[in-house]
Length: 289
Image (cartoon, rainbow, N blue to C red; front, top):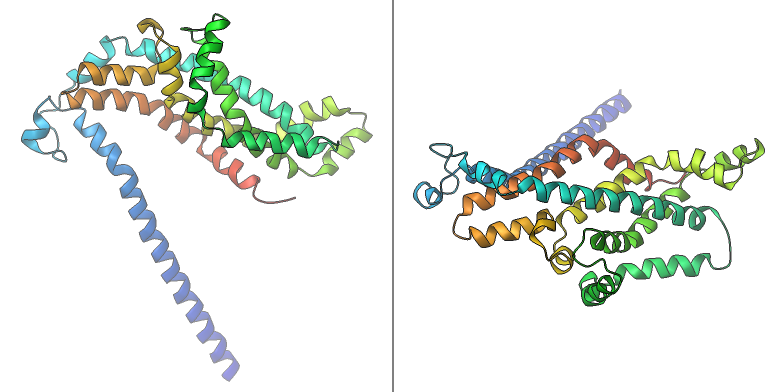
C-alpha cells in the first residue's frame, strides 16, 4: 500500500509539473503571438485611413470610414510592374542558387578527397564577408560586362551571397542521409550521378525548401544592390518602389502602409503554404541517422 501511495503521489506531482510547464509555454506563446501580430495589425489597419486620420483618430482606433483609395493609388502607380520584376529576379536567383548549392554540397558531404576540408572551410569563411563592402566592385564589374542597369545585374550578387550559407546548411543536411541508401543503389548499378539525381536530391527536398524560403525572403527585401545597380525607373524592383513611394508621399503615411502591406503579403502567403516543409527541413538536419 505504501508503494502504491508513493507512486500515486509521484504521478500527481509529475502531472502538476506538466500542467505548470504547459501553462507557462502557452502564456509565452500567446505573448509572442501578440508581439508578432501587433505590427501587422498596425500596418494593415492604418493603410485604410485617410492622410490625417491617424492624428485625429489615433493609430490603434479602427478606421472610420474604411478608405480604400490608398490601394487604388498604389496599384495605378505601376505597382505590379515592380512586383513582377521582383518575382522574375528572385525566381531565377533561387533556381540558380539551389542548383549550384546542391551540386557543391553533394561532394562535400558524401565524397572523401584531400581538398574537401579546405574547400568547405573557404566556403564557410565567405559567410563572414559583408555584402555592402562589395557594392563598388560589383558596380564596376557589371558596368565592364555591360550588365549595369539591367535585372541581370542583380542575379549574380543575389546568388553569390546566398551560396555560402546554402552550401553550409545543405552539406550538413546531406550528411544526415544514411550512406546505406547509396551503397544499396550502387550494388544495383547506380553511379554517382544517378545516386545524386535519383537518391540524394529527392531526399533533400525539405532542405532545399528551407533554403528557398530563407533566401527568398532576403532576396525579396534586398535594397542595397537594387538601388546601386538599377538606375532606370522602368527597371526598378519592389524594394525600390517602397523608397519611391516614401519619397513621393513622405507625409502620407497610410499610402506607405498600403505599399508595405501589398509587398509583404506574397511572402506571408508562401510561408503559410510551405511552413510544414520549412519546419521539416530545419528539424531533419538536427538529427543524425
